[in-house]
Image (cartoon, rainbow, N blue to C red; front, side):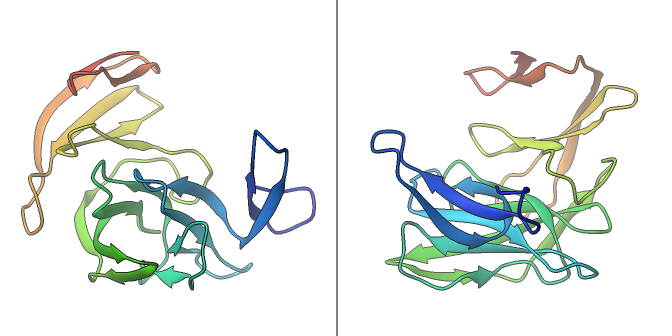
Amino acid sequence: MDFEKGFPSVWVYDVVTGDRRLIGGGAEAQFSPDGKWISFVHGLPGQNAQVYVQAFPGPGPRIQVSSRGGGQAQWSPDGRRLYYMAPDRKLMAVELQLRNGDAKASAPRVLFQTRITAPHIALFQFAVSPDGRFLINSLPTVLRVFVSRVSGPGDSPKKNASSVASPRRGWCTEGNLGRI
């Protein structure tokens, strides 16, 4: 991201050649698990930022996947779902069909109301487990972690645990909640 020149921009930097290439305006860029897509947010002052996906390295258009604004987008481990925070602090999910630079997205669906501090900051306040079944939603002021299980499309998330956590809480390699 390039914050020195006003609006943030997404750049790709090749660590081997040292070349860099502008992808476009946006922030909070994330590669899909297969590296063929990027997600990012983009918006203008006074408007809600929206979540987009775009084929990487291209060509292809930006595809808007949020409907009422969003930020902090993160991919499911299989790349078939994108999670993001809505402006009203609800965690949303979008099912994606990504093929040959073409993207189709389902209507966003609410997973649950979160307790995050702010939906539009460049600080990810939730995590997706390696198996894609659990989401962590933290409330930094009291360091409490809420774990929800999401089995698949159409299933409602179920809270499985609530525990006091340290700021270094995360997923261990087996996909269980543990210290990192």
